[in-house]
Length: 303
Image (cartoon, rainbow, N blue to C red; front, top):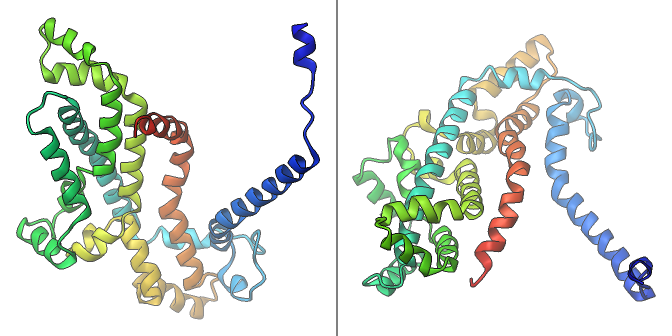
């Protein structure tokens, strides 16, 4: 009987089949629109610049070449900016998780004096700010505008990340903490030995949020960093794309193009820069996606 029930197929109505068909068509079109710009940049980066300038290159390189990348890697700023991005991402993730866990754990304790006030304080200062100029003056007075710490210290706390982690900590039975206290465990031991091991999925999700945020952040370097040598990869990419031919490397490429008839152009070099600076996060992201989905689902409970 059980096998018979399992073998029965649920008959779908005609309208249901039409809906599913057009749903797949819509999702496929949406996916294509989302992915094609990145694919187009990749095709342009592997195509000779002179041939790409003629037009008609849309889905794969017409004249394949690695010359764009070879000239892009001759620019020492690429490695320097990538080094800055990697360092700020790693340090930012560690410090961000550490301080977010401390705040979330403290405010998840129901008997904490002033819990409501501190929660409102963090929320209020998140939605209201002084603006760019006061913020820049604050960073300057703190001596951060000429320092690598500019990327780390202001970003150690995020209200959204705090909210996700505190929501998860709230779901852990209070009796677990009370039992640990009876056994003589202090607050630090309870946090690092009990709460954090139980919160690995949500912590992995927050690590992804913080890491992607640091890697893609071009704004902080562009407007608050006074030393170009400390530009992260995203800021350098924004400068290269925004200033176009102002880059000394690109100018050198154009002069070389005219004199030696090389195949790359400023546009093809820009496409190569985009690929070099975005590929690391594109490669890492799929491996962390499963933690992202699981962590967000956990954090959404009781949200």
